[in-house]
Length: 82
Image 1 (cartoon, helix red, strand yellow):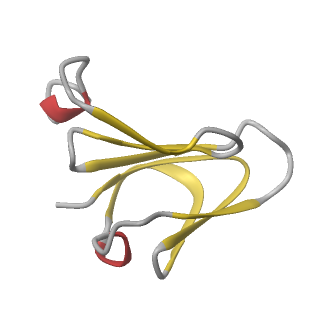
Image 2: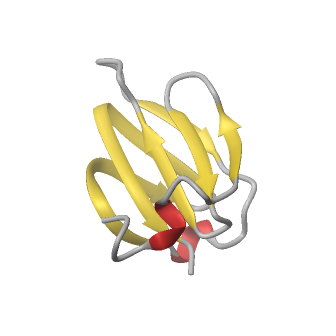
């Protein structure tokens, strides 16, 4: 995946939006990553106007709701904000 999307590599900048559950961060100013290691579904707001138009690169159990993400238990996603 890092070959196809170099912005996901270790050289990309990281901006953390939420450091609890779900861990949610922006890598390389393009890829929004969220991981929920708990059993409970959670919602996180992301202060980025591009979120409603995000395209899923990988993941399961994540739904975009406006500028927020609804992440089911054990859900994860990598979203391309373009």
